[in-house]
Image (cartoon, rainbow, N blue to C red; front, side, top):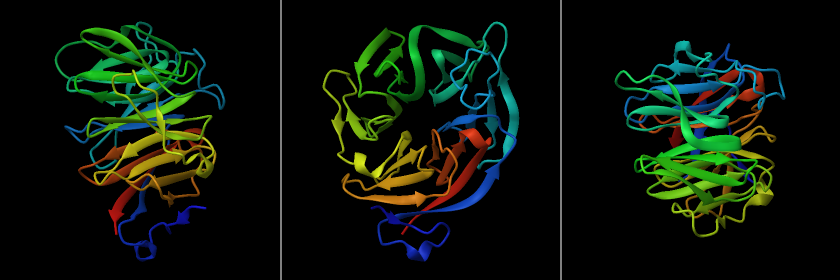
Length: 282
């Protein structure tokens, strides 16, 4: 059973472990599924499904993207809304490249340019059954297809398909290595960034119920969100020890990390809010 770190009571953690202190709750969101932080500017973005509970994959054209200020205050609740030309149906995972914010939107990916005069558009050639999370690395963007148990990689050279575990959900990169979690297998994996080798499981499935998001801290500690358990966990860099970082959450989905400020964003999908934590290593 994972060791519990008491929220906000830093003295209860052991040396080399992480503690999380809740510092802000952002309300009045609508089905927030993912938070991503632009590493260049520190600006966080929040995807909002804006639909009835349980209808998060509906093609209803009602989603929107919120933009926060660095540090977590609301900047623009409806920074980008669904339009006739570029509808948003169930925006979920996102990633930021040097020039754009990419959003996984059910069966396609939408691009919102962050520089220049380019306009929002659907990325051609990138399709899936239930596109879920995204990550960026080395000039490429990646999107997980949970229903298709695959990952799609795309860049200026084209679109390729990668091997992935069943019901792959959250994906991320750290120091050139790629990692993912599986919703149905409750497991964490290291993936081959080239998509050729099979995924390598951590062997920790007994600790989890339904994993959604994944990030990696600067010391190599993994942070994962368990949607059903209502808990965010850490996994030690050696992939052996699971600890509770934050519990008592309601449907924690695709977490976001602000490395510079040591902040962790946890969207509570079915409760229309994002909980913000300050991370501290002890």
